Length: 417
Image (cartoon, rainbow, N blue to C red; front, top):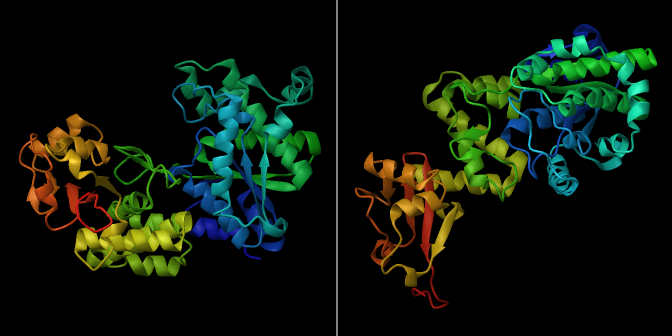
């Protein structure tokens, strides 16, 4: 058993903690159960969720017991923390479907065999609640003045906070109480925007059970350029390979800002911190190698060894001209019959996702940033033709870092179909 608080602190995970010294001592002398909640607002988590997922993995690797809590009940209310407006209301069917997608992703980070970890769904205890009974037993412990003083509530009060969302803190605090009683769970973790909800749960446990529980929050992830972690011009970077291909996932980390490399290696890999610091020492070309290590390691954790190696080979083939691997690039097979006349390159730029829209594709062409193989696309009227495939598959590029593979469909004899 290892002190996971020390491990998380060294790797940059810890932003705030309740009774930090006491918690650290407890984690050093006995196994502790810790949980993090994830509301199923979509059928996949995204790169911004990697920090809590990795924290659960570290909890288990250090000999403690993690619980991934699926918010099947709280998702029906919606967490106002960190949000400027009310979340879209989801149907129970949507929440159940989303939950199944998240369950599969949890299992890539924690080993659920032998009781060493657990997944729970707060719908099991929240949906059967009697509202009046809940208010009498739990609501009496909460001060409205204190709830309104939390930063997340103050931000929302300026634009409007629904009574539905106002209940969220009570429900999350009750989750902690239920897990404390049923699982002997002593620690809740989450992002900094969850601090008020976590502290409310600790206070509820103290009032109801007369016992001590603990909380740890992680820094809210923002890249060095000020963007929210896991967000791009094309939208979120998803963990589901059907939403974001392993190659695009790899490229997101491969192209991160130099200032983020060491921090991201600490967050999103299991490499020892001595190795992380050595990888990033000196900058320059060495830092470029550290980015490749980062992208390969995080893609391996999320998508597996085979996908990570395929993405690495494809990136080297596309951007460094090194060896095979182009077949692993995301791509599209075109019917030769549709090449007379062929599609506009600006349409393909948008269809491939290299550009967010046709207007963005036109701007890219006009600025000289679009390429077909080694040819710069000089006109928005440029169409693709069969002659473009005379030397085989064609790489469509947007700038230096985005690439898409175009292939001409062929019949079984190897000739154009």
